[in-house]
Image: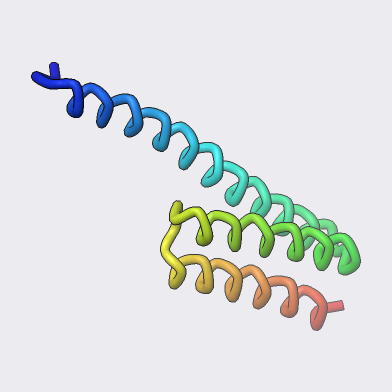
Length: 90
């Protein structure tokens, strides 16, 4: 239990930020999963659309400070490599 008001406020803000961060991380994971599903269906048009949506979600997470910029760049590069590999396979 916090001993003073600032400690109580810190607990409140920490819980609020944790919920926000979890929501944003979930949207990033969902976007990446949708890209992988489109790749599995061998649908190049849909996978490129989903890749664009994933880029947007990742960039939003980086901008909000939920994930580090390097992690965002790494995730985008790996997704793009998968999409490009799937496009070459066809």
